[in-house]
Amino acid sequence: MRSRAPVIVMRQSLAMVAAVLLTAGGTLQADPIMWRGKTVAVAVYPPSRLQIVGAGAEFVIGATGGLAEPGNAAGAKLQGDNAIDDPALHVARSLFLVAQQQYAVVAAPDVAVPRLANPKELTHAAQGVDLLLDVSATSSVVKKPFSSRYWVNTNMFGRAIDVRTGKVFADSFCQMVRGGDPDPLTYEELIAENAAHLKAILAREANACLEKFKADVLGIRS
Image (cartoon, rainbow, N blue to C red; front, side):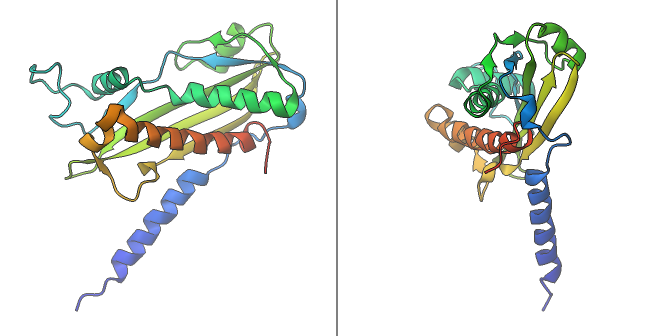
């Protein structure tokens, strides 16, 4: 009888990898003194697109077009058809509210910035405020190989920038893989009832990143 030990070891290794991805900390840890009483603006990017990876024939242009859409176009259509919010902006605004409650920061107008802006561009756009809260994200619906089922993943990066010096003084990366679900879902399950299940997974992943950013970016630890 063949031993199952290698399979067990492989599964344990994958679980350890997932744990590392979910718990990796930021490289610059927050100093609460930096936040107290400061004026804070939120960086607002063009809405991030939901990425479709490994899309099959279910992603088509129009009702009878019969042409497979590229992943980005499919993701944009899925977002538009189902009014799926940008998780990065939700997390950024939620972080600001926490900072306001914890450190009495003062709200400054949002700062509109181009996608992939560097700290120098961000600080130039945010002149007149003390700190800029910057959160960006990429979410993806990833097809499981040799299957008709999909995982949902979110990568999110959060940081705080001192506008006066142009330097990042706290940052964190959060990677949520496979949506926290024990099994991947079919496309029909994800988009049923106005994509209710997909929205719930994205919200769950965003809230997990929010909790991580409270500790790493704001320095608030329970």
